[in-house]
Image (cartoon, rainbow over all chains, first blue to last red; front, side, top):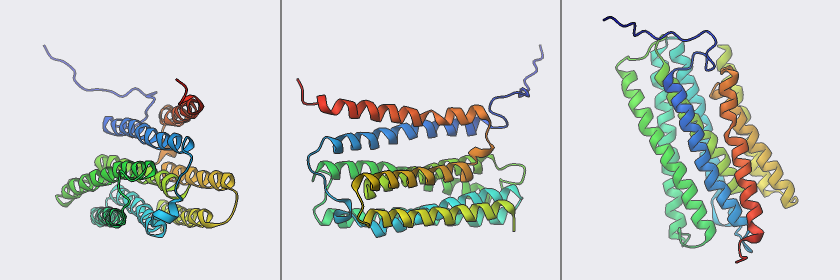
Length: 197
Length: 92
């Protein structure tokens, strides 16, 4: 018995032309967003119930982290340019911008490790205070996302080197871009709440 | 230059300027409440700029936009519930 296995997307599909992979990534982003919300809101609640709270600027290196924030914004730009390049069939541009994004992510992680090293050296450890615990848990959780993103970019860059992507096949790059922009988007909130407020 | 590329560059410049302003606000001598409101407003604007332009939310369907909106009220509800709980935390 023959079966028609082709799947026709209905004209009024509520998700338009979004692929399953893209919808899956959006779902991950929603769940991950709620995880970050949990951490940040729990931190805010602990802070609201605390009688004393340190001034972030006196403990943390704000100019250095502001530079890191700027760097992450730049990598969001290079990531969207990587997608823009391959959508126009520019494979060389894709590889170039993916490499810049990867480099930015690695530098971001390097600066974060440098920051941790100096903070721990000065006695600001995870068990120092409630503020220190919130700081390390939230920034480490984000750092792990950046690390995942760096590994993810490396995998896609490897595929790009093998000329897997073209003007008609850029779905994987778009999904990677969604994840990386989410990492940037979350950092904007983490930077404001943990470092500035 | 490609129309999209110009938009992406403008967005990146806007994000960088807002970051500089945010850091500046954290150092200036204004009331704590004004500082928090301003910083959160700037952060929300920056997040919207990343989502709308770089994540291309503007081109998604209405249904997907509504689904993506879910974490915002959920987060606010969670925050409100936790904050409401604070005065009763030490009552046994």
